[in-house]
Amino acid sequence: MRFPKIILVTFLSLLASGCYLMQATQGQVSLLVHRQPIAKLAADPATEAALKTKLEYVKAAREFASRELGLPDNKSYRSYVDVKRDYVLWNVFAAPEFSVNPLQWCFPVAGCVVYRGYFKETAANHYAEKLRSQGHDVVVSGVPAYSTLGHFNDPVLSTMMRWSNSQLAATVFHELAHQVVYVKNDSSFNEAFATVVADEGIKRWLQQAGKQSAWEYWQLQEQRGNVISGLLMHARQQLQELYVSHQSADQMRQQKQLILEGLKAEYATLKTAWDGYSGYDKWFDRPLKNADFISVATYQQCVPGFARLLHSVEDDLPKFYAAVKSLATQDSLTRQKLCQ
Image (tube, rainbow, N blue to C red; front, side, top):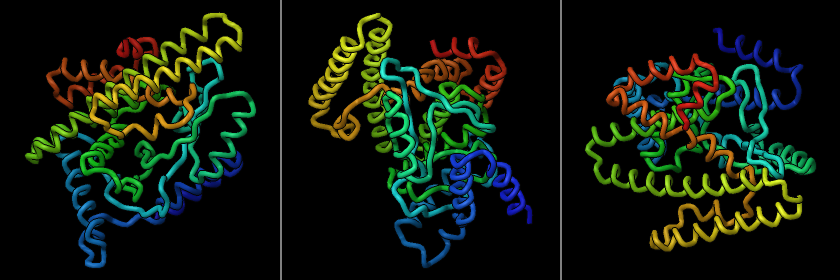
């Protein structure tokens, strides 16, 4: 059986690379060891009814992903793991006090990314404190799902089960998209591509299933999300302009606080217009920092460009994948033009 040998080689090769990669390897091994086939769990009378229903839904969405969306037909997301905690990972995001540009960390397989992930929250918080002591703005964020880019057969996780069915399916589509195209050192390109694939995928999935009410609700949530992203990107632009204004540190701190307080005020007004919708309260009900803008910039900045590219090929996904693969071979400046 090859699997244990592969894991052993991987683990030993990372053993000398420091504690961070050791914990990452140990966490990944734990997930792989505890995988159970979804088909087997769904057929087991002992499986809890609510979980069985979710697993049947994932199974159908996973088959749709390969059959109708042209996503990889492999063993990824055909197994399940109960991780017995709220999140599978905790990501650390950081930026200098007077910059919206994130710190980056580089790894052998994934290349350079704008976060550092930990399988234990205490370890993430410990590293976050180290960065804060160096003067950085830092945020620790729980992660319910992630992808190994097809290097392993990723399982569906218990941390994903609290989502709506639509979000669950969209996440499977998103993570599988990373196996189609992934460019080292270009998180914005990768995440925007996967986001557009997921958006197109969930539209087709819900419409084919005749789930009109679910599709309408998804669109409503997307509209709200786009408005929030617009607010955040505007505030990020204000901060970016502030940090190159050559004001004193004290002046910039004061202006920074005003911008962030203004952002919260805009959200309060928006919430009133949404009849008190509270879906983003948790995000806004805390002190905001430069690092809070990293995810929205990474995931959303290039989405309109990818959406335009998809429409330019008449929403033909195979042609879209081919166009993105071609673009992925270009230099970073050429790829960035898509985001403008």
